Amino acid sequence: MSTMTTRFPPSPTGYLHIGGARTALFNYLLARHHGGRFVLRIEDTDKARSTQEMTNAILEGMEWLGLEFDEGPFFQSERTETYNQYIDKLLQSGQAYYCDRTPEQIDVMRAEAKAKGLKRLYDGHCRELDLGPGPDRVVRFKVPRPGKVVFKDMVKGTVAIDAEEIEDFVIRRADGSPIYQMAVVVDDATMGITHVLRGDDHLSNTPKQIMLFQALGFPVPEFGHVPMILGPDKKKMSKRHGAVSVMVYKEMGYLPEAMLNYLARLGWSHGDEEIFSKEDLVEKFSIDNLGNSPSVFDQEKLNWLNSHYIKTGSLDRLAGLLAEYLEPRGFTGLDQDYLKSIIPLLQPRAKTMVEMADQTEFFVTPCDELSFDPKAATKFLTDEAKVHLAALMSRFEEAPSFAPDTLENIAKAYLEETGLKFKAIAQPIRVALSGKTVSPGLFETMEVLGRERSFTRIRRAIALTT
Image 1: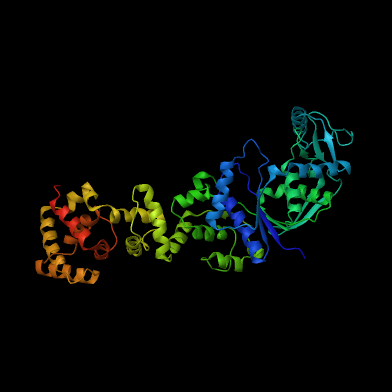
Image 2: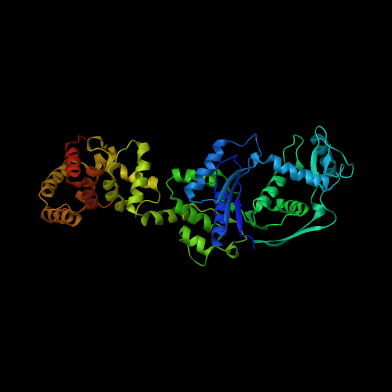
């Protein structure tokens, strides 16, 4: 029995988007679950639109998601001679033929068919003319008629297509280059692909490809077509829904494990479970649990998953990532231990690494460069508040430790003596330390900032003219 082999065949005419990434993941999981092989093939036969930049972006996206391939990347642009060898075999066996109809003639033929209420299929004009090669002649596959193409889709069940619904389709252009349908069949056959799992926008290609497999005497792989991903408005996903490169999600502060977990749940389930590591997915993935209804992209669900992985992430890893997100903002050479002390305050609050970087800025801004929000300073750094700040700081300076409980007890004692409410000192301290009215826990923030930073900032706030 042959080893299960799946493939991911992106076209380098664009970035690796959500739909493509999900297809890659499902094929990766299917192969890994069965101890099989996962092949990466770059389908770059569209020379005009394929670029090395897009190829690099696809490879970068695969690496970020952790979707390691066993073979490849193979490039269709390097296999033209192989495709033409098989096209020539079909010509020799009478299963393909040359056609001299020009694109303009084909357009006229389709228009006439439409006007008569007929199907707009190529009418087979050259099917029995026995033409040879010549300028501007394409090669068409001779669809066997009458008959049906019947296959068991791994997701949709039995699919049957009447051969009369399929025109004699082109397999080689007039310039000698092979068409997608031909290239993909030769690749799948010669690369030993046993299972083809892809979006259901490819369903119309499958009967044509099955006929080519059969005509060339190749084993036919098992096919499965997964419903498309829709936006929240139940329409085809577009950029406004989040149909952007997966690397944009990295820039937005999402973790790859959250992205993988979320992609897997777009059309696949395992009971009521929501949280899956990559290892869990490999163990539990099954074709039987793929849904046959479109999935809806839910940004809030992705945020929830990402916040989970941030909350449960290791300090060492998060500190390294946080430094990467802070560097473009001008914060370089940061002490990793200091970042690791900040992160536990932010893990319950940040849904993305970008949010964590936002909330970290005041911790890593040099004290003499910390700016105060004007409205916050005017409202909370009043002359009366500064008197309390000065009194509190003198007590904080004498504290035996800088632990949150110790600092809080000092503040409580001061409030009892003065008869003040906590709000009378909380926001003035917070604005003095962070420059704004929102921060993690007040005394936890002071502990992380440490004595020197905390006192320097409080002194600057006291001296501030508002």
